[in-house]
Length: 215
Ligand code: GRF
Image 1 (cartoon, protein in one colour):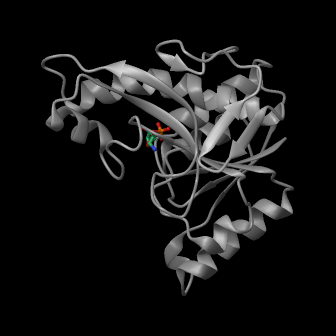
Image 2 (cartoon, helix red, strand yellow):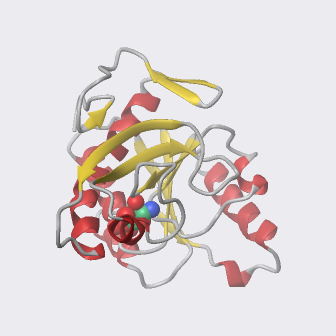
């Protein structure tokens, strides 16, 4: 599959995908990375690994629609089949999503529907939950919503801060995101309304449900 990856910052999830491709765990190609910000670490990662990237900034376009259309054109020009939001800090509208129906996935650092929106790990620490985690889901028009592909459950420990919990969850993010891409690439991810079944996957385990196979 030709992958398009949208980023805004550090790009550690992007790195997890780059590494999965480099080490042959993913048979897919990263056809284009789009960053909506200049000078971010994600771009450095692209340069280091010779991954094609473009910076497409919102403020260079008159409207959000034009901005999204520019991203769609760039991705389509590279034959992108699956779009991965890996720390992309903007909410996509119908203009973008209708160009890639059920072909946009996102990683979110909570067990959605808990703690949607920004700073999910801070929300979890402040709420006092004892488990949080991360989710890979298809992107629907509502923020941090859409059919769930895989979740990982991560404990919250007394004394946790936003930073310490974020770090713990991130290690799980780096595993479930490439795994979800692999399953989609293998044609095993079936969507029935809000529900997703990964064909042949093992359900019912902790901390990963379905269980990881390759990561
Ligand atoms: C991750 O926590 C991801 O779940 C969230 O934004 C963060 C991005 O981190 N959507 P990185 O840029 O992949 O390092």
